Amino acid sequence: MKTMPLFLMIVCIFLILDVSQAQQKGAQSKRMPAFSTSASSTSTGPQATTGTGLQLREIALEGEAGNMYVGNAWPLGRLVLRDGKIIDNYRYRYDIYADQMQFISDNDTLAFSAPAEMETVTFDGMTFLYSYYECTGMLMKGYFELLVPGRKQLLLKRSVTYHLEEDNMRPEIQKETYLITETFFFKTGNQPAQKLLCSRKAALDAMSDHKKELDDFLKKSGNKVRTPDDLKKLVIFYNSLN
Image 1: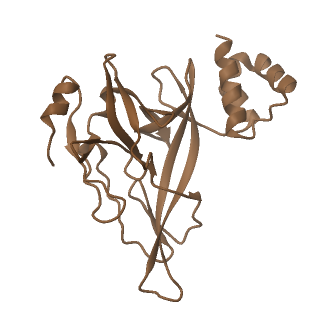
Image 2: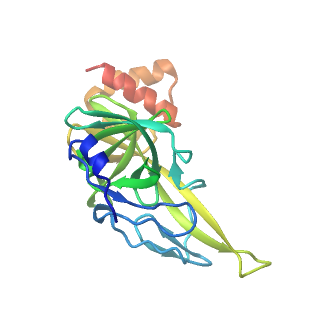
Image 3: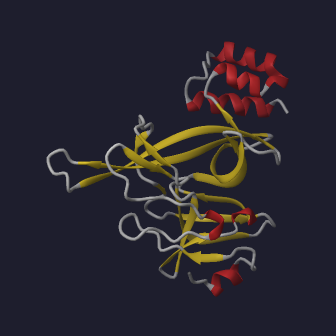
């Protein structure tokens, strides 16, 4: 790995940069220690691997086929540090599989090894933050898209399952497929984000301190909380009550 002294100076030594050499095909990205996972790229047949490095066998794969990168075209973005400093004019993308926020500097692909120093990264009309969250009884860290800011933050967590599928006619050829799963999370203050189902009951339970007002809002608006847009509208209304 190599570092970029110029960029370190720009961010006032708040970020440590490592070269990740990420490519969509070819050699696998080098990961910084903070993101080190054991992810295989040689699974075949009914096997697959996830971005957490877990190998899955004989399972029904879930998710929609898609790209493992958000911001595949490297759009310009804005980085805001926790101390308020703002850094513009860098191109970003989010690697879902590695759970890395990557950027380009001097034709090198870099990634943050100290993402806790980051407040938000915004590019291509999306804002991302790095947060603790609870998952299957464990406390984990990762990147989320911020869908609704405010006292209650509505977050979106993307995960990817990497699947190699053999061609029935030509077994020596394997087709790469990335299945993207999206999960909503709710976050209050500095508390870890909690998983939130896109349903009326789950939403009202999560915002029970204003349950009556929310119930009235849903009845008057006809909002059934069945789509992400429905959920966003409900959270926006909830935050307007405070």
